[in-house]
Amino acid sequence: MAHRYRSSLTWDDVTPEHMFLNRRQIMAGAGAALGTGLIGGKAQAQDTLEPNTFEEITTYNNFYEFGTGKSDPAANAHMLTTDPWSIEIDGLVDNPGTYSLADVLDGMTIEERIYRFRCVEAWSMVIPWNGFELADLLNRVGVQDGAQYVAFETLVRPEEMPGQRRNILEWPYREGLRLDEAMNPLTLMATGIYGRTIPNQNGAPIRLVVPWKYGFKSIKSIVRITLTDEQPPNTWNMLIPREYGFYSNVNPNVDHPRWSQATERPIGGGLFSGRQETLMFNGYEDEVAHMYEGMDLSVHY
Image 1 (tube, one colour):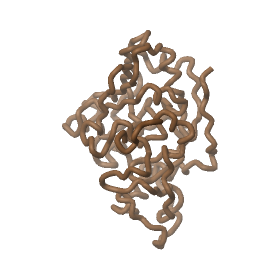
Image 2: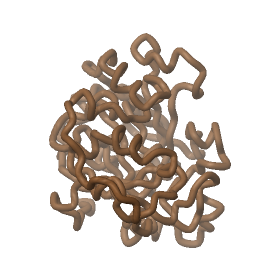
Image 3: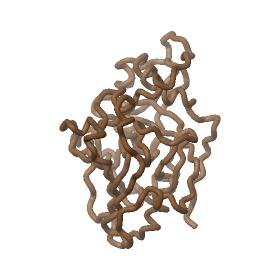
Image 4: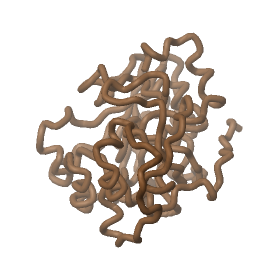
């Protein structure tokens, strides 16, 4: 039996659900300073937020397939059909094919994983995901000896995903991991969040979660997984390679070209709560640092 990851985080650490869903109001209140990492801890503001309606608290997402505005995914994602759903698994595997989501989930142990999750805008949360290890799926289909990378693609369905009607990005959205990263027990295929089915705007019905990397590595609404011997393209690296490297590990010692990544502000600690030091690999150094021994992480960012 493969090693199972056991987090030291508990429900006491979890970002309250309304805070997770209420990022639109939080980020709007913080203003542009949040993006540049300039919010201080001395400003005076109320430490509590009024409860919001469900409609209000599910409207801050990046999912360009539904539009570039933060409220676009919530406004448009209801058009996405998630049942039936299938995933094509191909490349260097013993059992390639197109698998229904039911086939993928059959026999999988769906576990709750509480992860510390940091996004590139310099704020962090602790999120409870429900899902299974990607390694379990890869072992089931049989990884061939020559495989070195795992590539992922998001659905292309412009009739239901209006953002794809524009050349905002090169569709489909693509991501990739090195095989050892994909097989790490931390790497999760998530099907739920806060004990519920993932909302469409958050990547339903199945998405990747890689908690020691920045959020854009966690590709949503996956329809294809390919095992390959070559480093696959990933969308943001293709678009802006200077800002978004293939690895995209959380590394506080390497600044983003437009802001510092040395500190972060936890969501849920009050709008103007003090910043804290960003941890190497988002706090998962013990579990993942061995995979990058000998690499210059300022070059392989």
